[in-house]
Amino acid sequence: MSDRFDAVVVGASVAGCTAAHLLGRAGARVALVEQRPDPDAYKVVCTHAILSSGSPTIARLGIEPALEARGAVRIHGDGWTPFGGWIRAPDDAPRGWGVTRRTLDPLLRESAAEVPGVELLVGHTATDLLADASGRPAGVATETREHHRHELRAPLVVAADGRHSPLARMAGVRGRVLPNGRFAYWAYWGGVPPTNRARVWFLEPDGAAHFPNEDGLTLLAAVGHRSRLAEFRADLEGVYERYVSDLPDGPELGGAERVSKVIGAIDHENVIRPAARPGIAFVGDAALAADPLFGVGLSWALQSGEWLADAVAPALLGDGDLDAALRRYARRFRRRLAPHHVLMSDFSSGRPATPIERAMSRAAARNRTLARAFDDTFSRRRSPFRLLDPRLAPHFVRGLFSP
Image (cartoon, rainbow, N blue to C red; front, side):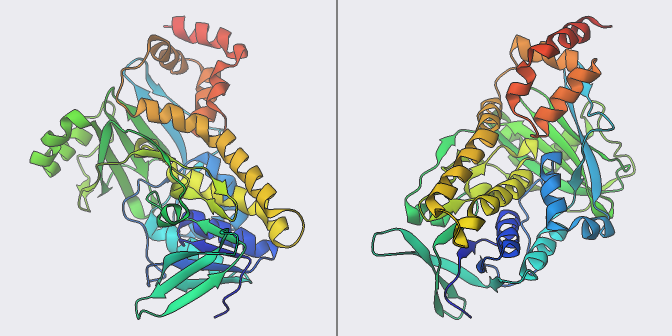
């Protein structure tokens, strides 16, 4: 094993594999470090919908044929509110993907490891952040389960190590934490009637999600306000199953069967960190972790890994200044994702919808142009400011007053 690379990526999950894959394809030498020893390991606590904003990255990585062969579902996203019912994505809108992490994670890891220049190191835990004489990050030290220490040196360290990011702590990069007033429990079901519509319910203050996946598996999530946590804990399986069975216009569960245990995310704070500092960058949940109701984590992991690779690859190969490239990545990350994060964090408090939000929801359920604008926004392809476009005003009025 070499000890000198152009980049060391810590965390071989979605964001880390994406960054390593694209950096390697650009010609960089990359160490892709994964703590778990099993190359087929995958993240369990994840609602794992890939919004259409992440689909171009999936295509660029070249894994579309493998996903299709595994039966992954090409999905649209619909939202239900008590103010107007369903806001449906247009049939011709870009599609996302419904695929479990059990399928996605090993596929991304194998794909990245096959790229020349990428060295996958499984069973290695990053224990220290190495620095040069000026104190700038210059690699990581890892330790295997046999307690063998390795020093992997590189001008760039990529933290793809999750929302609690040990590397962020080592680098002294703190995140901005916004509270989440809700918790989530979910499970997998078999026998739910097939659909290509991923659906989210905004139940004020609660929520729910229905995400179809390969192998006939459906993820059903119950997202409750924290005032209901004791109720769920007292009878978790019973309350969860009643919750998803009683959803308005919910999935037909008469012939369905729950095929997994109920999985929970109780203290899921909304966290955003600076996406880059000199010598170190953050991608995926290490950069931004949001309320799981919206299913944005995988899409943003794919996009942030791609944005970083595009920004820094030339500098790592000797064309340009690395710190300037990192600043460009951080600006792009902040511009594209921070407005969504702020709005989602505010909504995750469980606050009631404002009168204008209620009116817009009702209008979007009745007007196709407005529904398309909502899909642009809630798929995260466009900024939330899309909904403030004055050209939407006539459609808002027509939708609001239509029968």
